[in-house]
Image 1 (cartoon, rainbow, N blue to C red):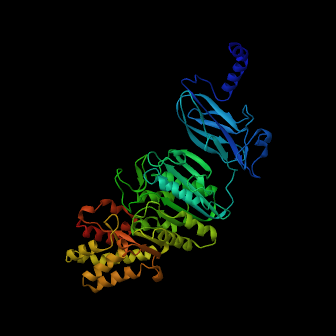
Image 2: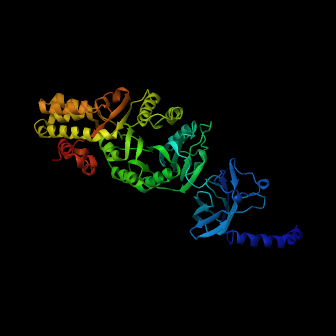
Image 3: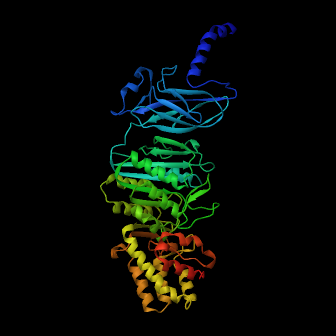
Length: 515
């Protein structure tokens, strides 16, 4: 054995020198290495000169290995180009002599869209690095062909809803993207809840593709972003811009997926809309509006797959960024929207109108949870301003009566339809109970205007509404904030609805005995 080793020494020396030229050197006992493969999605737009000889490779189906792609490692700025490895596999790269820690790898090749991913280097080990199991597949440069729909799902599964994110991804994969519809998901996972599907804990972007396995996600990873704080407006804005640039469509749907707490900000120990466990952050209503504004896309539909967001205050905050909104007054079951049946109807009829798709969200949600206390409504945003004026007039009529009829007003508040947070009440039910409790023709007229003006059949914003279960049987599609004295939060005055309709803000403070 000793002789054999001595005979091989020159070859080993040459091989070591080759390694230095392909990404560095160092003591592997204290440093680490990474290696991986780069492939390009086959397309007429992709330059065939980059492909390695076919006899040497077994690339993933529909791809070619890319030799000569530039791979950059940060921090440090070290670069290598991909080549054929010793086994004849093309698209190969490696970096040696890396200090243990976190790195970002960027891959670029002429004719393809660049990609990046994160990797953790460990001392004494070589890590297979890439977007998916050591493989990075680059898409042809330029946007995909324009589709009829792009449905983008901002899925923050970094918390106790992670298992339902896995479920919903698999539901979408029962249909997958097709010639009419792009389904694009940014999915953030975290530690401690669901260990399936590789138990990865970073943030990845997927183009949803069809498969028949309802437990395993097989859609291609477009980007591995490392850990992303999904509870920041910048993260949502970046997802919107990235998706629209790469997956243009005639109509856009944005799904907001996570926990929800209505309009109000919540302490970091609790939850808000899009609560990210790893960072402890969340989006306030102002930050949500900020993210949508910066995203620069007017959505045909925003579907809010979060609890308690079916509020006038929420709708008004984001109304200028979409035509329709679907949301729930109550807190829905953990699995949320049934994406399999919703998307099946869109795939079957991609020419449906946006209103029709919104109705599908409402109908399929109610059909899936017949045995639960659930609510769901479709809101047309162009009708919110006129309706909000009626609500403000109702507040103006009720406001001077509160000191004279405080007991009746509070009874109407307590007796109106409540939700998981009891300071959220159904607006129609409250107006009805106030009208019955206080004898005032002016108040009755204003209350009638609110009740009649809510329904879409009367020109109101609630185009479709449904609920099931005795616990929510007095729901009508829009809730509002009606707190007791101990439930009032001063941040309410910062909402766009309250600023634009000050009488309502004054009424809420008066009801909460804050005047």
